[in-house]
Length: 241
Image (cartoon, rainbow, N blue to C red; front, side):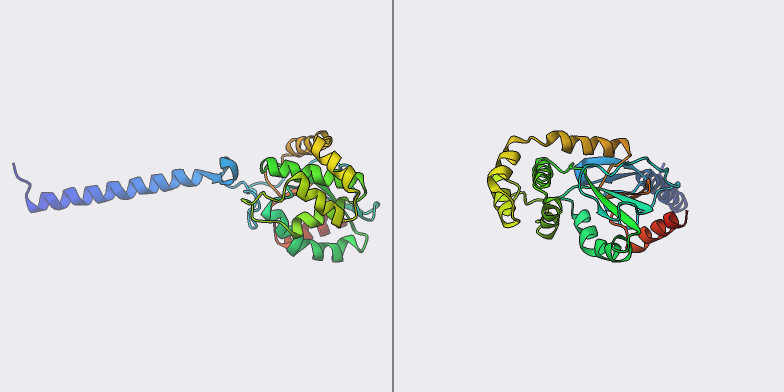
């Protein structure tokens, strides 16, 4: 039996309705899970991805007991507020923090004695990050940790370019920063500081770090290259507590 025009119209309306409903459910399903492109790591919706500047967790973050690690700490050692940053030296969002946010943080809180600032390693972006992490450890052995730290962020290439992360090239950098190049080269080529690098990474994992940068402000975690005002709000609350 052939469909009449009226029946054809009804069938068309039903098909349209089915398509709309299906699209709605597919959209809902997609928003349930988001993917952090870096390494394909799956992240639940509402959780902050690596460096996401405006990401906010769905619940108030829980405080974590986090020590300052083994690198030299900046600022007044008796400051009421301690900030511990976990970062990868090749992370572009970490570079954004160093370039755009840290100078104001230093001026307002570190130089005024209100905050002390510590850096810990979370080298998770591949073998080149491990080389960079070992390089700052070797620099630290010669009292040049912050010099090498700053060099990496000021001269950070695109994440896909790993050509600078070799023993020979970083030994040359060490020389320009006033280090003993023979000692540095021996240190870096031997990977003697792998244990320190791994210790920081493990501490970060135990503290709930999943991306960089992650900051602990008196133990309260803040994830991502967040605006300065967001850090300021947490710091001021900690100073008043």
